[in-house]
Amino acid sequence: MKLTDPFRCLLLGCLLMSCSTPETPQGVAVQVDRVVSGNTLEVSNPRETFPQPQRVRLLGIDAPDLKQDPWGEEAKQQLERWTEGHSVVLETDTELEDIYGRQLAYVWRDGELINEELLKQGMAIAVVRSPNTKYQQRFADAQEWARLMGRGIWNPKQPLRQTPSQFRRLQR
Image 1 (cartoon, rainbow, N blue to C red):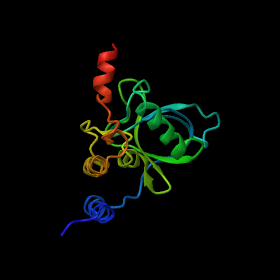
Image 2: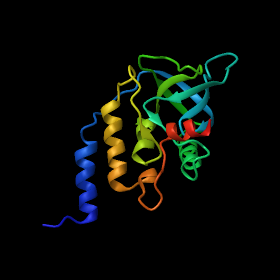
Image 3: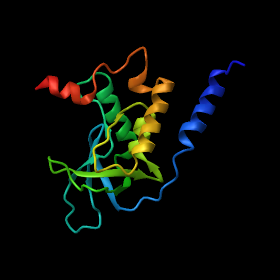
Image 4: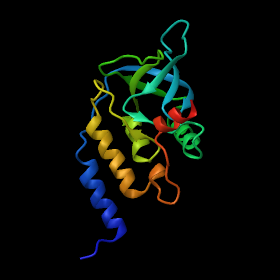
């Protein structure tokens, strides 16, 4: 029996995505003021008297560098569509910030884990940075889905040729 593409998509989706259990995010609600890149936001806490912008690096993913045409800009634009000007919930893991002073977080909007959504659309690569591994399997499944479906950076007609970290190393 030959599976049709829509049926195969449905079957793969059920297999890959049904493994992830819905989570209730635990964190702080903030306002997204600006999207810096495909994996970095600038947020402020509206409950503060004088809200100070703070940079947030999305955990578990690495989006293409802005100079990686066309994927860097596309990842940024997708993150803008989903978050800019909206309230999101930041959920932390073991480490609270990176070496650049950015807060590390899983970003939730309306019950959707934005980090995972970027992976499903092929706008980022799943990256495990121990000890921050809370959604590691979920992210691996989302990336595999995008790869199998040829989405975004996994599109065989225009694939991402270097990982974001390889690209940054070569730019130095």
